[in-house]
Amino acid sequence: MRLFVIGCNHRSAAVEVRERIAFDEAGVARALAMFRESFPDAECVLVSTCNRIELYVALPAAGQPRIAEAISFIGDCHGIDASQFAAGIYAHENVEAVRHLYRVVSSLDSMVVGETQILGQVKGAFEAARMAGTAGRVLSDLFQRAFRVAKNVHATGITAGRLSVGSTAVDLARQIFSHFGDKTVMMVGAGKMGEVTLAHVLDTQPGRLWITNRTQTRAESLAEHVRQRHGRTAEVIPYAEWIDRLAETDILISSTGSREPILTAEQFKPIPKRRGYRPILLIDIAVPRDIDPDVARDESVFLYNIDDLQAVTEANLAQRRVAVGRSQEIIEAAVHEYMRGQERQQLQPLVSALRRRFHEVGEQELERVMPKLSAACQRDRELIQQMLHRVVQKLLHTPLHQLNQHVENGAANVYADTLRVLFDLKDESPNGDTGKPIGEKSQPRV
Image 1 (tube, one colour):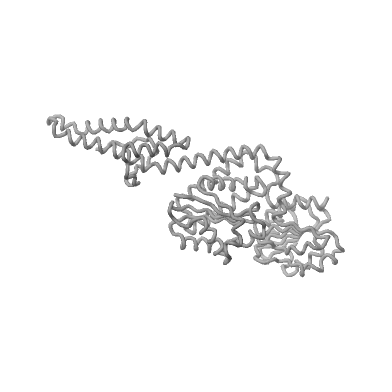
Image 2: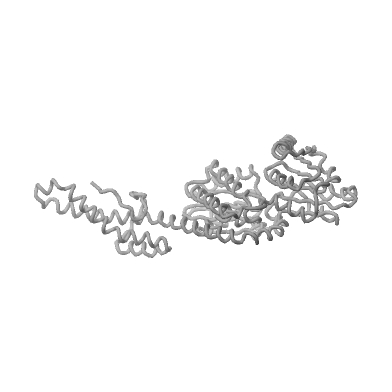
């Protein structure tokens, strides 16, 4: 079995690239269905967030897709040629793929190290793959292990403090404004990212809070949530009016799921003059971007997209060096454990073949000698057979124990090849495999 991941993130590709191949929820469902039809022998999980798009694949060693085919598959899902985004794609295979996944779910690969949203997002992606039938035994085991690793990493304290994209956006706002009591904040989008960001916005105690969304009932639901949980009043603005209300807005945080910009330079053009050219902060945390970059041409406009938040997070990273170091140790230990488990599983056919060979020799000798024994000895056939089994088990104990030990140091394959040669083990079919760990005793054959 072979494992690999392809993808891009905030470090490998600019937002202009990521937004072209991002998947919304419906897009993920369509892609998983396409993958299942195109590559029925392979497993996959598709992760798509504001900062990364990744496809995890498990397949037989000689199966499809290959890495190049998987990259092309992403392009096919969006109707674009892979050459338009391939330069920003990274690929990791086998042990490196396992390590990458563990780092992702543990937030060590996130823009904001220690943020916890990515774990929920990957869990959602895995569940979507499971429901679509593309997450089989291999990826189910791997992702469940990854979630346990993330839990252990979070216990190091790496998640302490303001560590989400939403909180980092608010930190950016604090660099522009010294106080918020007289500021009007408008939130465009009532999805999960907007809700999380809004919780941090409320910590600044803004003078007014406006919420708008294309579907007004969702905006109203979020406003009610704010009232019940935070004791604050949030006014719901009709979506058709939100651009006009920018003249009274000091901070705009936009996080919709639109495929096209919801604020163009032409739409924004009259706003600065109406504001008397007072500063306005526009934080665009959506992918694809909600705000046309040309909006920032006016000197009174401060526009930041998801990639711009990276600079704000650098200071936070320095405070978490110790936790990051401990987290990396946890991940490396988990990677080692997973890969050793895979090696043991791959060696099971060899172990079964070796057991069969020894037991076959014992049974052959038993059949050869039994006719020569007296009638009294014939009645003790089962006792003799059990004795042969114990002899075989004792002879097997040392080589299987050594093989198990060398799995731990990564040298098992050398010893496995030696056993194949010494005992002429050509047939290592899993048929007849006991499924027991290396070195575990089988029951006597009777």
